Length: 510
Image (tube, rainbow, N blue to C red; front, side, top):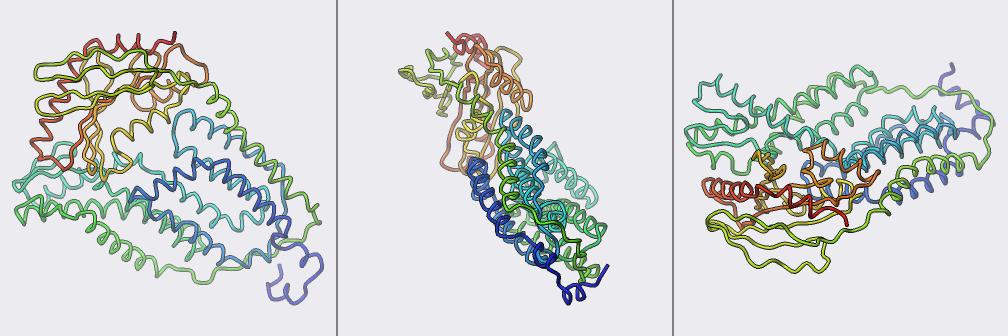
């Protein structure tokens, strides 16, 4: 193996003509990227929407500039490693298209977005070739952080934070009572909400940790060690942050005063933790990153090879969206022919039934014990996927704009269906929701998604029905008043003992 300086001192025609991506390769990449952008435009829009509305993913705007900086750090690779398209690698896009199709049928947007980025990675691999892709794999794979994923960790993080605080209060000898996510001390009550789970800190820390590791280490073990620390340290630090808020409430004698601006204080605390993490990793930095070895020159490929590789990759990746589009074209709207006859408990009254007129969604109001609830019934095509149902649920509950959201299951043991209680903060809404698939109460979680995915492919003789009963407030209610609101809502839902029978008849296609 020759030193890089010697190779530069004795350039050959083969080397000078084969290194780095040539104009046809760059043109194929540009065209492929544009086509992928159009193909996965819904995924891109959903990702940008999440970046704008969720504080946990605001850092995603920095991912592309950070990846480009990592590529700039490795710019000499482009002059040392040849770009040679390998069209046969387009077969790797087959599982990408298949998984995207499954995620689309299940209504899992994060899965669709991950597969969109995976399709991008396959395009880069096929057009650039394995040697160049592997030499630039760090910056290229870093693009996966564009996907706003990780929300499924929130319940686990909430429980960890609650248990950590409970143990910490035991160690400090502060009298308290802990029940799941609720911690009570003499000064007041604390609830470990989603905002307290530390997801926003964890996701940002992992993205930064991977960037720092790629920038400062070349050893796989050092990189893995720093990335692991970037995962563990923020989780434990958030536990200390939550514990500190409770302890501060104990010292101040007021839970409300201690919890004020806890999100802002959390970011300050997080910044300090990350600074300490960086300082801890600096002694292990490997400032000298060796330049890539000079690979042998290869025979010149046809100028159209890169374009053919890009087209082949796009054709395979598009199989998933094409199959989904064909199924979606068969999903037709189902207008409501009637609305359920609600059984109103004592203290409840309602207005006249709204006119239907072929609508797929109707709503009316019910007044109960001083609270006004909006009841809405919406029908979806029998072949609808759960993504449309989830989108409607989130619009109703206000989850898209909410600062914090909590979920709980409502169990009645009768014919009311499977209901979920959703409470959001800013906007302040309390909503109970249930859905029916094939005329039966939909399963909860993945079970319900699988039921709809099956019907979206095989069809069904019943429309999908979503029902919601919710109340909106201009301002946050006091704890006692919110508990009373939830109690009244539960009473109203529990009274609908024959709702399953009505929904089976209502959803049956004629």
